[in-house]
Length: 93
Image 1: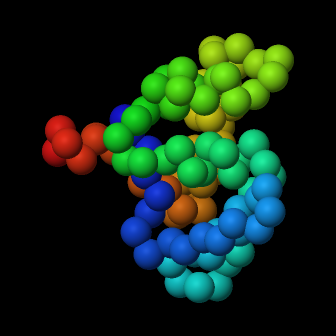
Image 2: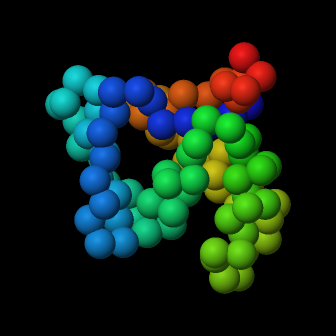
């Protein structure tokens, strides 16, 4: 299942962090540097495993398997806040 940023959600880079404003404009979410790297990788085409494989080299001391677990938990939090969409890649839809 691919992961993409939800349409209508806006974000701004603030140094090494990202600040996200939800679609209604009422809730701000601030991401740490690791979350910010992952946020920028959400393209609506790759799933958790593909993201982990592509990003593992960006982080010291973490295995691809552990990164996949961490990304999955991160995506669950963002999905609950309606900040990301999880579904089939657009190319396959």
